[in-house]
Image 1 (spheres, one colour):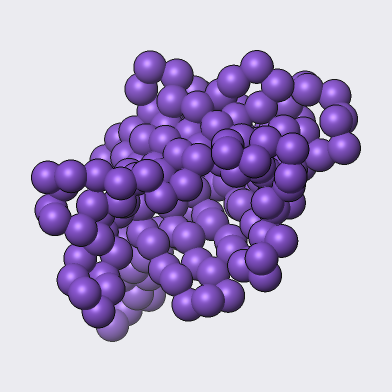
Image 2: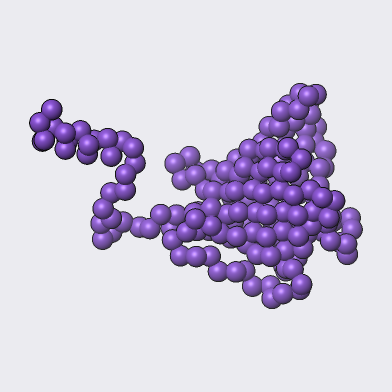
Length: 184
């Protein structure tokens, strides 16, 4: 293989493997589209409460923008010992939100959905010993916080049962402002 052929082959391999191209003056920074900001209402340091026990904290939850604003990381520490983390990202190629949730109890949920009418709705199918369980989670910004609800269905979506209803309030009654997200 001569030098010219080797250089062409290297250039093709770099393009296929995703080597960064030189940014042109009109190239937008990664993750700068408005869709990537749709979940920003959830960013912050929160105390989470069960809706039926609004004066007793159920968890401390930290939601941060990471990876230059391309993803949202959740760190959940429940008073019952449950610890979980999620990573959420807007998948621009498919125009969906994607979240992966894992816990210290071995739970894994891979959710996908959309932002519509001011809320994020994500769905998943959990594999259990009793069969598949459908999940539907909704995050809704509210004055002074966020409400997250989840429903599950063990019969393919014919009937739904509430799984949880959480209210997020700023930790320590801090200012209700949403923390700024790093610029991409």
